[in-house]
Length: 418
Ligand SMILES: *Cc1c(COP(=O)(O)O)cnc(C)c1O
Image (cartoon, rainbow, N blue to C red; front, side, top):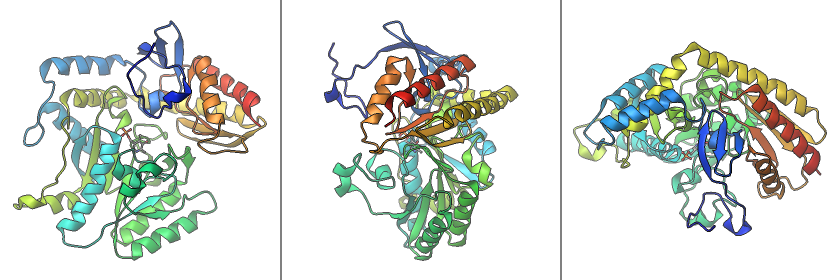
């Protein structure tokens, strides 16, 4: 069967088969050829409460029949107003404005434009963005520019803008990172720092300490540098708290959210900002307005799905269930951590990761595709990052399903480690 579809991050030339999924429920994907596949990575980090959550589906159905789509420049609707009020209530007091868009990448583009717009509109020349090594913020030109450079974006280098990069604050090397940050902030032209709080996802599930995050926030405050938290992946419970910044007891100036905002059901993103950034765009002068929009900004159906997601979070059992999952993940990780050829076992909240010993350990190592094929053949959706295997399941996953995932990982370690 040949399809005209060009899939993302897929080398079609390698001839891998592309299974068709007919339906999904909870942590399971049901394929057309009759298999049940355990979704151990939440369909690329988006599905939080499980696939086809009945509350979210009902909200989508009701909203779709009432108001499907609306121009959002100069118009508004109830689902967007309700959601904005809920987001403001869920986040620190200094975040007071909500800008809607439709993907994590866009929410980051918006954040960068807000930061640069702020300095421009108050008439101060600051235009450098400080970024962290190994970060991932999306695949558009702007978000690639603030992310890690490598084989993934080398072809587009000519279009990417220059940034100031601080090293990843690995345990024992935190002060080095903080010194670099302070130097860039002190240079006088730093507009903003953008970071993934506590957990760098696509960069290899790298974890750093809340103390370091707090120290980074303090340096930005001291030099008046805008602190952008990209919680596109870490938000909505992934790191054990609703948002990762809570663990460092800090408040970002700009916050990007997407992925789990609709429980992973349909696309939506938001960029929250503090009052100063909004106020710098507030004027009778039209040239100071915030020049950004996408066609589906604040789509009512997506907002309704997000409102249903927030209602689910208001139920006490949702948090209790997440806590229980974090504890179960800890037990499973402890069991495989002691196996030979397992390196750097680590966990934050609902996410665990290990590395399999591999002399060529990099993203392009041959181990990645081999592991992917092995897991796929055994009906578990895991997508290793090079030799890093991570488990980031929907919160509804059962004990039995989690056990199967880890049994298979143990088998893979045995089979593929060198
Ligand atoms: C996934 C991700 C993005 C990009 O989100 P998309 O919806 O895929 O555009 C941005 N930042 C982080 C931290 C992410 O994990």
